[in-house]
Image 1: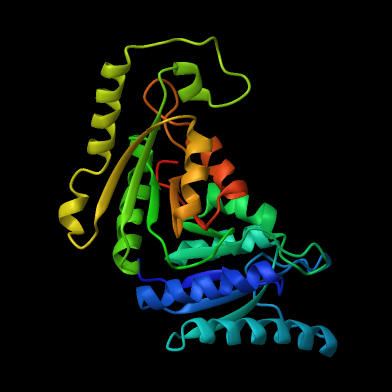
Image 2: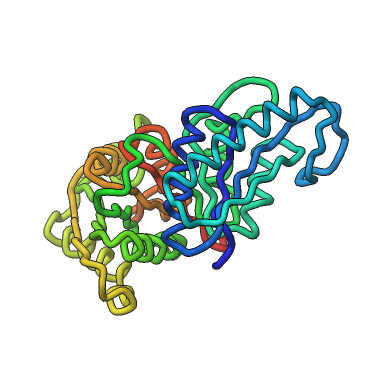
Length: 293
């Protein structure tokens, strides 16, 4: 998709860091960057997504200043990109969801300001990860372009988009790709990974390891040929899914997950895994949905 990279702006430190990351992403893709400030004016009974024309000069100057500062940060991160700016009426979650339909990537900070007219980026990030029409990159932890791309593999059809996105990101960044598939000999631990796990059930570990190796290989099938410039490191690790991925994110530049995966014996509950990464990963997290979700 050749649409712009869209980033939510509210002037908070988190959103300004997100602007820098979004600018670098736009530069890598060769597309424009769209700075979007959602203005949730409670008395403005207009459909969401409409451009807003403030009548108060002071308020206009405040918002213009916020966007000017964001634009300056964007050009510092990627001097050659085209930057567009927009102030739109509506709640941030709805405005950015609408924007995602024409974007190649939507970027938000992990949390923002909680004041009148500001983006509540904490809740916005979670909503967009579940409902956006394009991949969502949530900037948290160590927002450095260095480090490999870490892909959470579960082998479900719904996660295929995340696999392809991870390969493309590694190619754009010129970094390695670490494809990580976590497994455990307990069905309860692997499938639920939480405090309400069912009774411990043990399986033949050699057979299970071979099966999980097959899941990992099949998930990556065909993409090595499509992206021959990407060096792939396959990691099959035994351990709780969320803990394993969060720990591995400490050495990554980006983590890529599906919005949700396949539960049960052979899959990860990526709904809970993606949420855990959004809250605890040590680097930015990209959540990729598929059309079926």
